Length: 194
Image (cartoon, rainbow, N blue to C red; front, side, top):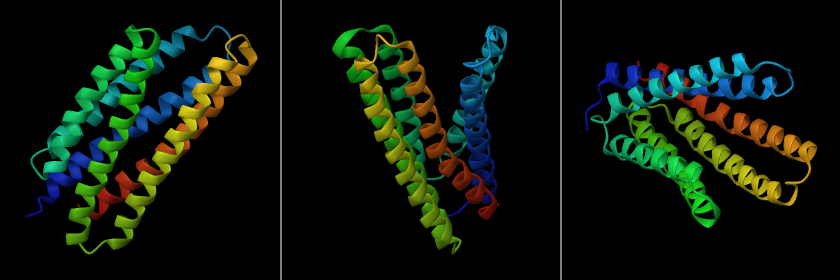
């Protein structure tokens, strides 16, 4: 397998930018919860997060020809979006199942991106970054498990607005922490493969 450094750098860097925009959007969205009358700002943040997601997809699409795992990750991304759309428009068990499926597909997608990227990092002799990629994946798994457990608690606290807000804040912070590891890995990997 040959390494196209320009394509790897550009694709991973775009994924980094997309993930960064998503994390900033999540963080600012969390802050907006505590700012009354910030609906206009929340729409702007939502738009920025959407643009970030699109940039991330473009990065992954650029990588699809470099390693089979990138292509599989791109396909899983599309399937995950479909699952999330169904989840948001469904009720009851179907909504829960599709939401869970979307979370699992997101984790598998990250695993595939890390595995493919680690192949090229190994070729470049950067075993330190390979370990960083594994840690990023494990951090995302842990944050997803915590978020799913806390989401289940929202069913118990559905009558308490204060309890729901606290759980939303915890889920957001745990998600940001997990994503931060992946974000750092993408940035370091892009730089190492430049």
